[in-house]
Length: 91
Image (tube, rainbow, N blue to C red; front, side, top):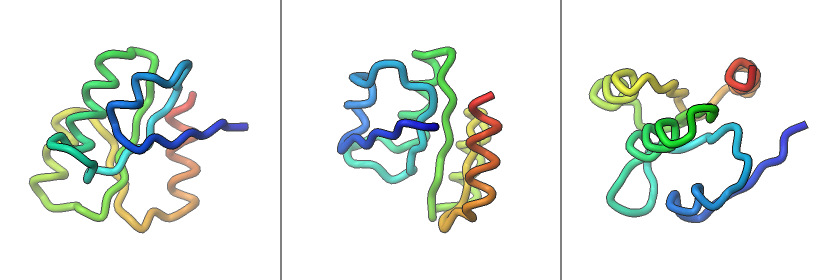
């Protein structure tokens, strides 16, 4: 029941109408990473839910994500874990 959209650059997320959930990698084009972008989007849209996925799970990265209150799932993401996390975020 979800409609998904993909954008080539994180700056294009602001152009998506009625976005409920953003799934974002940490490594993104440009000089900002997914932690920075997702924290901004969640601040801009109080009803938005967000999730980070990344193969980069260094202690520093995990600490940054946790400090922003973000969920970070390691790649490769187990499909059942992803499904349960998305369901939980959409409630």
